[in-house]
Image (cartoon, rainbow, N blue to C red; front, side):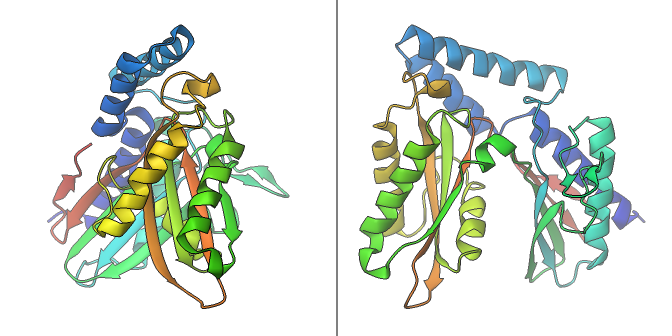
Length: 292
């Protein structure tokens, strides 16, 4: 019989390694397409360097960026999966192991004690966990390390409700214009609308997990995603901010109900390295890695 706890740890370690060293296939393909379609010499040179970097990281199994990100896990625990609260400590153990062996750059800095050297916070909040309880006997884990540069340009705003969807669109454009070249474009943009001031940012980050060009099942939302993609590329930020080549690879949105007096909007931006990797483990310890 398999040691389920060990399977979860080994799988989580592997997910962190994959996320750091190998882009999801549709992201890589989109970057290659962007390189081939870029006409300006500066933009083409930057896109070529990005694609070469991605290929070298994948071939040599080395992190594609020196900033391997602050680690977060999206976790769905089935009500009949044999582990519950233990999962959190197992994922922390996998994070510390990946820090040493991938290696991941230590990015967890305590305000008073300095860098922990383990990617684990001293006060229990890092790695950050997004837990969901679901039906079934499986455990789904998605590892998503996110770099500091792209996190620094994230934006959140409480828009007057009367501005509606028009106000949402205007704020997204403002956020990307402010980001400009600061976070290694071309970008992928996640937008969260509704909920509360914390919920909208969580929704925006969750939106980044959807594969590129997989638009929202609600056609009204999908139409806004596509519209924003076109609008944001008209900003002509360009590859690495040089004004040539793609500025934004895709835009994904998630909506939640809101308070009548509030319209929270969160924008979470990923650099060209949209890193995440997922797997599902059943109650017997069998692992199925998500297509990457």
